[in-house]
Image 1: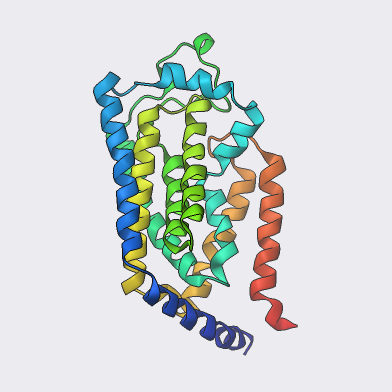
Image 2: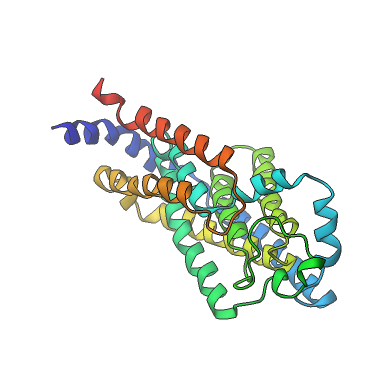
Length: 274
């Protein structure tokens, strides 16, 4: 009976979510692909200029001089796929169409990022530069450099929100924040600029594919399916807290984040008990 009460409460908001997907302009998908093309062209031009490692020797020290290490460490955690999965709880109840679209887009991004990482298996900067010549923030990762997974994840998250954003200024801010996450990977010394550009391209294309698929496949807007999918961000919470995933330790951010999102979940889905 309690489960049925929750399902009955969810039905109206899930129906509204379907209506919002119906009203979403298809031009948003085209715009995402256009922005993705800009990053792809930047990568091509950078490669023509100096090859795969181009831009790192001047961009890495320049970025390190802009912000303290702990700030770069925080920014890079915003591209951690587990952090972003937990953050989907911000939208799950009030904007379930965004939650569903993000999960679909994430599937495309995983195929793109993980597939290319193992197929290419490019060496990261710590595998090229001697330890005394490269100041790395966090673990000194050496393999699976292309593309940047953090950048891909950040652009998937930002790209989906980009499609649903109401104003151009919101879309600019989203792309700027995702780009900053990508730059943090160069600042940390664990990725080449090419990896970041490839991650941005893949993340935006994945977001476009997720938005396109969500418009036609509404399985995630069925109450039972929606409730089942909530297991994913909930499982990501202990995974995030007890493993670093090759990231700098930012305990002061991850623990409060998990607590806040857990409270968000209780408020959104267990308030019907009252």
